[in-house]
Length: 161
Image 1: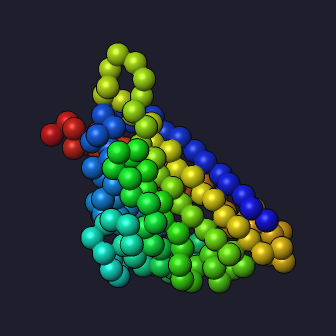
Image 2: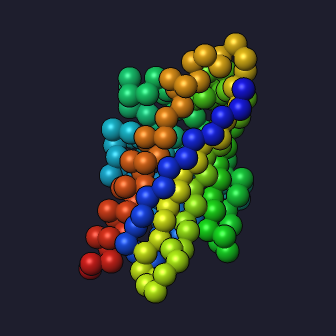
């Protein structure tokens, strides 16, 4: 079974500024500092933030039912402002998923002012038939919405400095 879920957030900063966070390892730092109840530790396993970078994310005990997983950046497109990461070890793969991909996009907002953008988070997943019944309970866009909010707060605070 294949599924997808997506959410958008309007942010009052230029897309170029938002991408500086989303398109780099800085997003991991923002998440770690702003959302310790979501992810309490992120280790850089390999890479520099570009395609091929592998991060290991650790979750607080009991927070999500997951303990950790490794994700690999498969797309980091500075021109289109798109970053994709796929789980490559542990986590969702241990729960019957054959693919679990997260995509962040920073979209320039049309209009007179270029001081706003839209951030979009998308989860795409594929799950084995025998685990499909549990997929709806496991897949949630809410953590990514929280990440987008934390990034928006960080960017707006930085802009005011």
